[in-house]
Image (tube, rainbow, N blue to C red; front, side, top):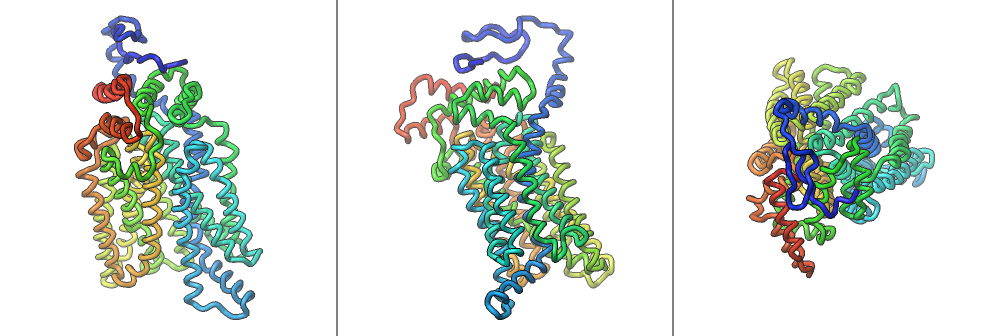
Length: 554
């Protein structure tokens, strides 16, 4: 069905022909049905979760964000065995033992190079995302995961620790691409009524990946000296599942419509993901935005950074991603074993108790996914950072005075679980959702590149500076992270608008008072910068966008 030449009237009773457009429902006014009409939103909400939408989100996350979380935790359990492998390989090659400083450097490179690979992957997204699309980029990305798994799994047998380090770098590239493309894909295929819940699947699978890495690293499973290479071979499984499943699902309908001008393909994709044949409303909403952006090409990173109309959206994304990495969760993982040991838990049992932290992550992320489209993004994000400030303050006191009373270490454990739950219930997943909601189609690849760059650079900075922070401040290091959370929460309270059930146009209007700009002005300025002439029809379509925002058509 071709929608390009018409404007569909709103689906309301008694709607008449207006501006040449026929109403979709006959002119009738049954007052006895008013109570049924009030129930339509709740009925619609249950139908938003189509089978294809669920499969796309689960398969996409399993082969993408799951692997990111898995690779965050998988190196912890076999760390001693890997260092032994480094020592033995070094001695066989050079004939003398490796010194402690060199071993520490090799291990630091092994851990931190994952973040460097992530930065490279984020930069690659803008190069391959437009040409391949969202779905195909995720599919091609599996080649990085499979190659990395083979390199790391075979490194011990080949007696080449360089293969393990290179594999970690390639796995970082995979993570950088997936954490940019997956949230973009989920944002573009989901109805706005469940966009938050669907977007939170990214965070849920990160937590499941972390937990799986902890579980498989137990001594009874793969956390043994002879078995640790299989921990990395497991990476092949999620990549293979995504590789054979995702091709049967459609590409993002917005990508097909905006960047490929494929209306028929976009309509079929909407029908598949929404589980219904009548997608006229969704097509009209997308085409309305498409008409406004008709002469706007894909925006580069520099253009996005210098564009006045999205200045505060970019600032908000940068602060959100920086707080995501700098809020101190890495410090929690560093102190966990020591706190459990001080509480009287034996060294042999600590790996099993540590699973409670991974389980807490999963439960908190699932809770966030269930309530995010009811409570909104603001309460979860601000509340999460606020609770982290509270628990960090108590944890600083309990760690400083832990030898004063036998029950203080147990209170420290409660604080650790509280910090993890607070993080995963809001700050752990919402940053990826906001990046997809703040920007229009032509801006999203550049926006996700900016967000990903801040994310991975902050990750690298934490890994590099954290040991020195701990060495200098000891338990008072948590006050630094509490300050970061306080600053972030305060900023979001002042600047961040609620984006729940809002379209791009409505969110842009919310930021207009900060940017001192409006979408139509942005379109005119951009067209003039490109040397294009906007005719009357283009200006009318821009004006239509403003009116559509007021009437909540888009």
